[in-house]
Image 1: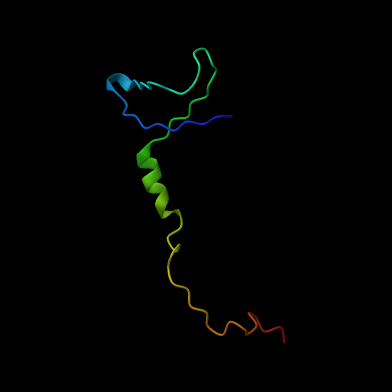
Image 2: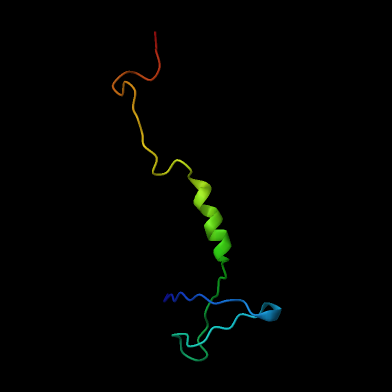
Length: 66
């Protein structure tokens, strides 16, 4: 399966025009449309990513099994 990524703006009436695609005329392709705004909202899925980590007594047991 070949993939091609392109960004385009939706025109009046909800029309999306994609020109100069690298596929042969008559070739069957599949299209998936994603909103760029949705991608920006997804950045909050992992709020702790990249934050510093501090280990307190990393070699001690987690729970006392006495």
